[in-house]
Image (cartoon, rainbow, N blue to C red):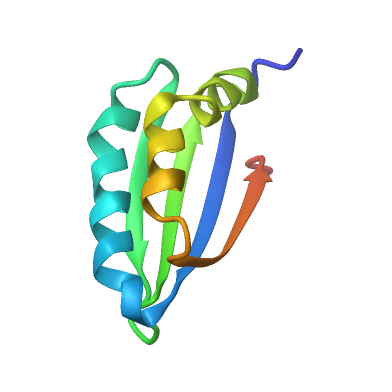
Length: 98
C-alpha cells in the first residue's frame, strides 16, 4: 500500500434553508479531524458566490489514514445531524504532480 501523501477535496452542497445547521456541523468536524493521526491540514471554505456550497481542502499523510478518518464517530455523527440538509457531497482524491 502506498504511503504517498493524499489531497482530498470534499465539495458539500447544502439546502439553503438548512445552511445554518450544516455550517455549524461542518465547523464541529475541524478540531476533531485536525487532531487525527495523519491529518496535515483540514480547511473549510465557503463559496463567495453560493453560500450553500462548502469545500474541505485536506491533506493526509497517506490514503490509509484518510480512510481511517472516514470511519470516525464524528463523521458518522455529522451524517446523522445533517440528514436531509445536504444536497450533494462530491469527494475527489488527488495526488500532487508538480
